[in-house]
Length: 100
Image (cartoon, rainbow, N blue to C red):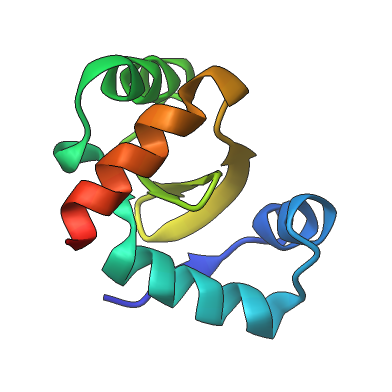
């Protein structure tokens, strides 16, 4: 499935990750493969992502890779958010469990 990257996502990736468009595309491909998808999350992390889904209306899905949340809506990468510091430990544990 091909994902279109919006201008807003490009600006946020430059601001928050320091990535240009080409690097964002490569990083996002890795995130889709190795990242934690919304259906695989549990606990506090799942609760937070569900809150984001309700806040950002539409059919959103979220992928977490590293310390960033990629927000996807109807085939478009909308934006990139940071995982709150209080959830870093849970994020690392769940990603490690998934990839082992």
